Image 1 (cartoon, rainbow, N blue to C red):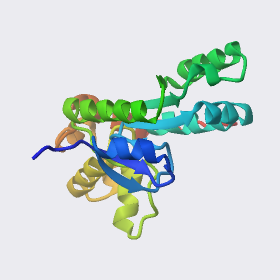
Image 2: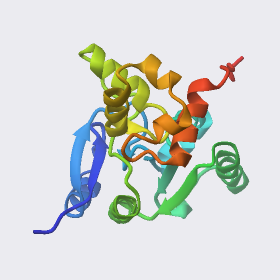
Image 3: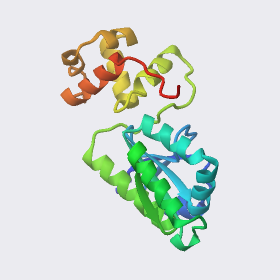
Length: 216
């Protein structure tokens, strides 16, 4: 039996051609996503925009806010721009300037797709490679509201870059509380399954950084 890679799709996605094509390639899980349109893992999330939506959101400023949030929550954010390049209405310099700004400011990878079917194949290839090359958990950032204290604790720890829900559960099981995780040193963190030295340093650093309000 063929095993299809798993992908989370935002429940507001309504493009039937894309969903039909993607459904033949991936195991689709429909959920309400607070960030992005397609979640591949706890480090890869994708925002998809048609050319019309890209230009519209660029004019209103919504594009830059969305990408900022995407890059703050996922280590490998991706923007897919879908459509024929001839359909761009705005000046080419403005489009190129926006794309360059997004990359230099938010380190977002931008992929151009001709149509929904091609987008589905791009999503499949990204999902397949991420599932093959990494052990990262398929979980959303800033997900649905917690119903229990335990779930709320999982969301807090799971939203640390590179952690995700499974590792958050492992950390909480190992240390018992958020405060104990904060008190743990780097060597203690590496004792948890799927946390190597690099990831333990990243977790330790984010838990001990001094807060700076970048919006002020």
